[in-house]
Image (cartoon, rainbow, N blue to C red; front, side, top):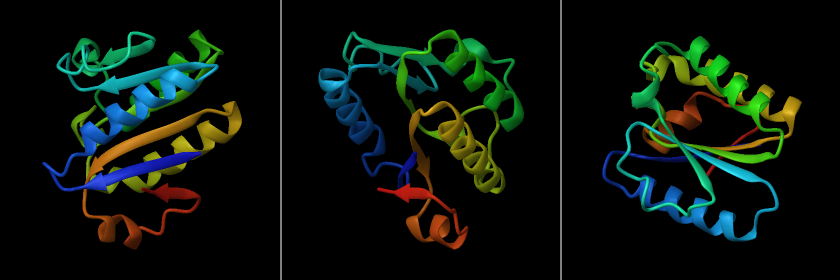
Length: 139
């Protein structure tokens, strides 16, 4: 399952993601990963959540490489239950035009490996609804 947290910059998406991640960490039987642009959220998240900062992986420069990166994360830990991706458009030079294909590939990854993804994107909900994203839940 892929779920999106959407809204323009400054609408509280990251704060909502942190709250969701910390809540799930308290009740989860599997592992949780939180992917963020930089190190600033590291101390806001429950210590049981694996924090990955994309600044440490600057060689990932496009959506294909990013999907490969996610495959690597999943293959390294079969107990991962949930992956949060905060501020997708700030990672790996992914832009709005890449979003439909990226999310479709993420959905396939989710189904194949039975992982849940919660992704925040700085876009208007209406713009995403116009993309007709199948099987993607917008929160």
